[in-house]
Image (tube, rainbow over the protein chains, first blue to last red):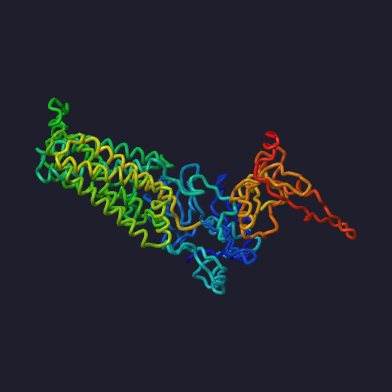
Length: 177
Length: 313
Length: 127
């Protein structure tokens, strides 16, 4: 079991639905977000190429945040999801410093918070909230070990990249280009 | 033209536009940790070398500061925590991959040990000191008996503490400026040097100052060498590392680093110490103060600049 | 992200986008000496000046002879606590509306704007 997400950068229109869906689903405090959209523009007019990426925690295989956590609050659960136990977190900030994707933030209540791939929804057999609401269906989620999952099928037929592979974190967010 | 920007209005406090999750507490803590490590290391060293008689300040007087420095450093670290009521979670588990866990446990051992060390010299320093309780007197006798073992332990722990102050930063591969293994030795040497500087400042014996001055000169040379090495490593590294080094080679931190840390914090005191060794009279507080300030600024600069460096965006 | 001018005061959507930006081609920006993020006022062919300044986004996504901004910002109503005075309104600059004689459709793209780099109100007071 290895949960992963594939993001179609060609289909994404940058509407921000995933961001709002996540904020309402997970009660993210106002002014914070667990996912965000990056627009990358290259070339010069009229030959411009635009890449829109809906980004979130990469749930890395070699997660530096888990390695750096002094209390074990950051841990990996089944499916490779990186989770934070709130009442074990001391808020030292080591994991925030260690994340090359800046995917973590310090919750106003003190603990560190981040994307959970909507673990509570997965347990019920549902997709993460961001995937569910995407109007262009550009987010593909599923189990990499299952060849028939949405994400496996998306990765089979397309070229993809991951972010900052040089950081050595083995990220599990694949961006279809 | 290439541009990359957040279009979903991401503006998280302390993370955007650039990371600033660690404020003044962490560099202060690193400085005090290094200072205490330096003081305790040389206290242990001169006991092991059986130079207690000649090195009164190093062995007895300077370690008086160590427990206070450690306590203050730990307090600064505590202030930095955002979920403070759960700080005890640090001591419910040992995590070998986490430098912060190493640090917490090392401090757990070296802080009481430094208190015992100071306590065992209390009667020598203040002849009229009285422990009041018989059990404390017995404990003191026990501590004095095993002083040499204590000296060895304290030296080992001091080195772990000194290296840890650097490793704490270098373990983060997400921050290219910090992610260099040379930071451990560099912070250790810098910590030892600040410890020596403090001891020199309070030492009354001319002989002791001379010995400490010589050791300090060696440490400063090693430190300069390590700094050069660090930049050579950066410039020969990946794009992110080169970008990190450029913060110091023409970027925002150039003046702070080269003027305050390298010139005023290392080269100037080194020249002063050479003059002193050559027989010129230099007030000892001048090089010492500059080394201490240089060490403090160095840690502030490293923590601030390191948080700006990144891989993405 | 927003729906016309109606959602700019919604807390969640305000979080996503709290002001609109004026897209300017890098070449045009170079000629005008405008930097990314600089605030400018806009004046159209009928000398109508925007009520609020707008930040420039220098980008290759726009052609040389046009500028772009998202519709729905630059509200003048102070009770819209989040969106009041954020960004500029494109509709107040549309003073020239063409009507298709056959269908009755309207064309609003016949308006031309220029940049004002200084605050127009301030200049008036000074002169």
